[in-house]
Image (cartoon, rainbow, N blue to C red; front, side, top):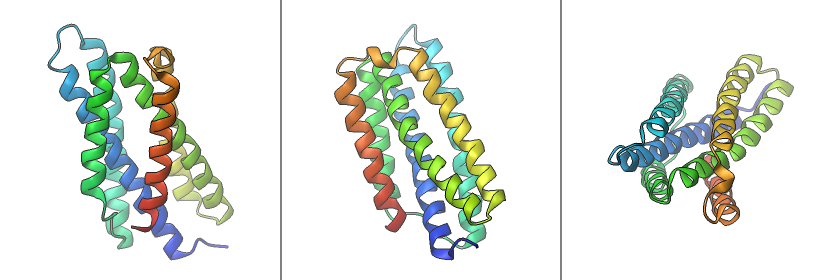
Length: 177
């Protein structure tokens, strides 16, 4: 059994959009923290995670081009929304920035996991392996954020639920649009 071409295109489009949004979130957070003194630790962490997200985005750029798949038409929206989310959570402090990462990566871990299962069932082992690697890196981001006190952010439960809901909505929209 192989994956339908349109389903593969949906997967690539939504994952590209997610990585695009993640890069924007980190840009927003860095824009805030790089203007503050004494934030070297979190700046280093964010730059490291942002570099991995950029690697993922670059990989999806290549996969979209190779498969003649168009990116989501909502890229400008996700760019602005991601940057705003990143900046807003950074303005709330380091714990809130980490809560943002934890919430986003929780959704993305599940999302990539579902895709890996679907791809393996369809015999798309190479793509499944690549997605599993990305998933592993996203889990590392989530774990780092949790270890840095994400759950101690002001209004953590509400903030996390809001971000997770937004991510799930963005996934559903980006698959199609």
